Amino acid sequence: MSSVTKVTGTGANVDLSGNDAWTSTSNITANNNSYAQALISDGSNSDYLTATNFGFSIPSGDTIDGITVVIEHNCNYPDIEDNIVKLYNGTSLVGDNKASATMWNNNDEVFTYGGATDTWAASLTVTQINSSGFGVYLSATNTFDWDTTEALCDYIQITIYHTEAVGGGSSSQSRVMFIGL
Image (cartoon, rainbow, N blue to C red):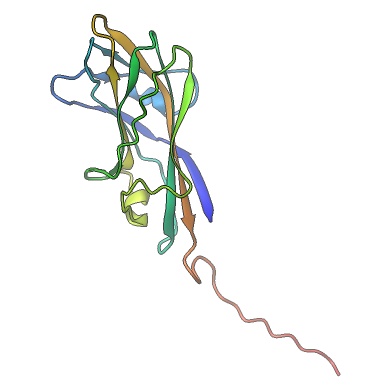
């Protein structure tokens, strides 16, 4: 099994009517303590913070064995938790919602979702993963019922675990050995 890890190339906000927007979304493209932010009202959810354009180039014919998403985030008060963490195949959200019920900390904290043998029940193809539209969508929720809380996201990265197709990737060559008598 091989793996390749990439940090998102594009961050964006997807409006979910009535939810709170993410701003400075391009900040999620590097682990540098520059953050995308969402001021989430009491008892409300954020819009989707989307991470796409990872630039994967998994060889055609390989088998996708698992997907790991790593998100570094924090908040100004520990009242935020994941609402939705789902993969995006370029046209729609797919597979399992990996949202954690663990409260976000008020210090940078790295959360890991999925794993080397976890495909998120998403049935993703190599073509979809290699597409610039492939990515992950994050929505957070403010569990506090009387104050607005700021959610912050530093970066999002994805690791794709894959097995090379039989006979794939390299040209086959025959070797002939002559042994002198």
